[in-house]
Image (cartoon, rainbow, N blue to C red; front, side, top):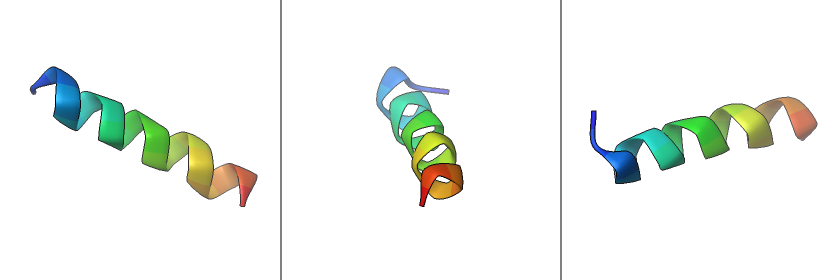
Length: 19
């Protein structure tokens, strides 16, 4: 997995639960 993809994946996981 690329760094960019991992960042987006992590960001989505963190943003989803917050929202």
